[in-house]
Image (cartoon, rainbow, N blue to C red):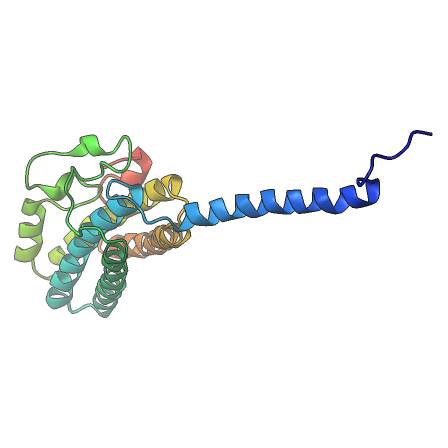
Length: 221
């Protein structure tokens, strides 16, 4: 029978190995935690999403208040109010994140540059309509001028498309980010706006009207 090595036996080997494994696992966990909580960079998907979605939400709020002042239909007025409140609140969170991360709230680059395959949609300087689902200046002028049921139909058509664009943007972020809070916000936008799309589609049908061409079916705006 071979003699044991001096000072080192099977009994002492087990705790040593256990300590080494604990150190390795502890280091791995520390790295994961550090990666999770690292402040997003200025060119990150999270920062780009926060800036672009804040702009996107601002237009939804504007359109909602426009139709709420024009319509006498309580279902339309309630829906418009809910959209305005929800998206104003979410916009505040997005702006708060940028402030927390020490980043500018203004976009320095092209819209959607944070999402590969989406930034090519730019249509011209100063025109935000290229961002998924955004209403053009001309469409907004038409909404401001419309009255009664005409205003309700145009609002519903524009807001359905706007929500579809928001869903596309939210899903793009969810596929790119591993930052829990931002991903959860995007997923909440996705589910909430899809529910409102269904409601608005029903309201259009009551007015013998249909949505515009679906962005979700095409996969882009």
